[in-house]
Image (cartoon, rainbow over all chains, first blue to last red; front, side, top):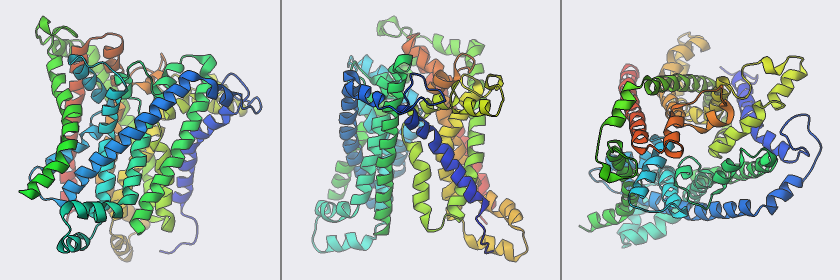
Length: 261
Length: 284
């Protein structure tokens, strides 16, 4: 069984990685390209698009909206996801499967359907669209992921630790606050970071619920028809992609750290 | 009692959110689907939108076409993702977790932006056409460049490969390696062991991957818009989207959405059926 040569699947794997990162690399390359069109051959190095990006008030406004939304929605999604995770891992109750199924629903229903269903409901109650309506949607689409990440961590927990705390007189909430949550800290941070990227990048639900203040993806989408602005749009895109990759790699290493400890 | 109170405190807030943001909107959608008018509830109710959906052949035909596109995208993505999952499960060694992260991370960044990046890849003067021109072929004669049905399929396959790899990886990773040793000891070649042991055991994961790609492809409308162009055709998601941006026909948009949900429900039931048969066969 032992073969010293490199397995063929390894070559294939690295080709696939190359294939996955190539389009992202293209965006980065064109963000430094001194040309108005996204075509080869490259025209030489420039930081012009980055300067133009930083000078666009609308763009920066949309970045601020997206950051605010992502910070708040991922906090709420992590909190609510943790509540479900604690309930399903530490309690026995009827309807547990139903609760889990309900929590997974936002993953199964196409985002477009969630978006239009919420849009119609809000309109039926005369609630005008704003960043608040987007916030509601972002929390709910992040919820399945945060629940999954935190409950995976809680499931790996030995009952003995929890029981020891309870035997020593800690009440449930003290045990939760002093034992369970601190020990799950890496998973909580990972859940937060993943929810953050989901919210920051979300477009398909947001598109239907956004009011007059755009988020960054909504702004980028609105700029796509404007060919003169395309290099700047590509530059923003490159920055977000690279930043997202970095944030997610941190989240991934935190989950690993959580497993090892 | 305190046990139930604690449980209630933990469950109530997330449950409230799920009710407000998912359950009630979906229930409301059913109501909207039988409304006679998009905005005026006093116009009364009718089944006209359902009638239109079933009598105008365009809608069911588009559903069928999208189903075919989604089938191809899902099949190709699963096929391409399988060896990736296989490598991660059997050959990645102690770097396993890092390599999984490396694969899945680009997938978790913006879906919209990943589609957008393919505009640059496939566009005239983009990477692909420049490479093709470079070896002396006229790029414009190739059907797979920007603004074609092929461009839509390629872009979607690219987007879904990492997600498709994950469920397959999970089933392969859990596979009892002693089964393969036993197959080897009994004289099976590695290829035969793969066909008779590894592949059948991983089929439930393959199925999950397939569904995982199939469903969102149905709801997509941005890919046809960005890389499909006029020749690329539209997907089912495009007609839902246009009911809310251009046509402003909410009852009909609701009918289209409900039809999509019913289709997904049927798929999931079918999936449950198939996995039961599969695991029933392999369960011994």
